Image (cartoon, rainbow, N blue to C red; front, side):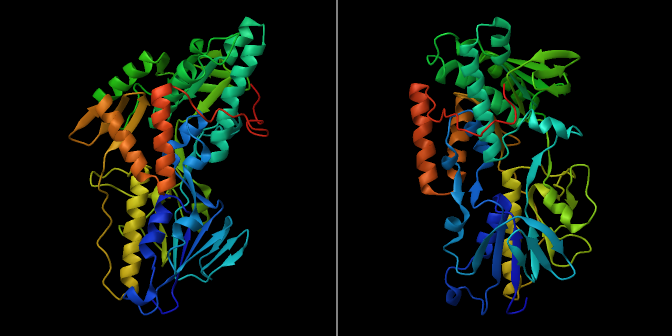
Length: 431
């Protein structure tokens, strides 16, 4: 790289942050680089969001501030990193410039796209307004408001049919998000809200987990999927397998040809790459991902890299790597170190290889599954390990302490402390 090298990273998720931190220099004089690369991180939000725990914001177990941390605070220690709050709207690869809502950023020497993913509605984009998924703070708040508002309206109505509808929750998708969301809604209704109402019993809430495929947790071993199903049913969740959703309306969902009235419908059935990667103008697969070289560079676009959920990368088994936080973080750290080594004049890095740290999903109190490949955990041990891993991965001591204390209090008391209905949230779909 030249002495004035400039690396631009679009996205401050797990991949983008890992890449930036690997490139960060606290003391240029001690970095071993005569002129450390200048790094610019662009994101439309001023915070990094711990997406794996968003479902707990949606079900009132945690507050938004528990799982979000300002990007400037995370990267402020690095002298060579600047942060731009804005949304990238175009990429000029010829001029090596990124156009944002705050103006042009560039020219860049290297460009890293780490824009993540969003929920896919499989060609039914109009369903997004009727069944939100926990992918952003705004959506998580909207789900929370919709859930809590449905209970409030059920408590006020004298119509038994309408009350039953309002107290029916449909969760679509039997992957980790759907399983965790269904379990969290069950705990909210059975424990946190159990004593809050006079005219309804929240324990009577009907919770349906709908999966079009033949089993839950398709990426997990069959034994762990079967355990998850039993644990959910023990919580009172009705698991519907082999039941595709044909339609969604303001009043419920059509499942297997039958209309099921519901006050809340939550989506967690599939994801696709966020549209930001399309600004490159290169071909993508059905999930919107860009196929990248073994070093995560984009074929035909020198100096451009794609990492995380937007990249189509293959594992050692020849299958595409899953859209997991650990994949994005490992790719970001790998690429950051490779670009830093290049700045020092060192040879290029070996091809990226993913090292699986295990896959996990929590079902409810004392119930979780953990897949390490050759080792499978379930029940109390998996639940405790799940909690430790998520607390460790949270960024910032304050967030770790806050989440730990909230979880301990919730475990002891069964109470959720974030049961707030705030104006303007969830207005797109009134129960």
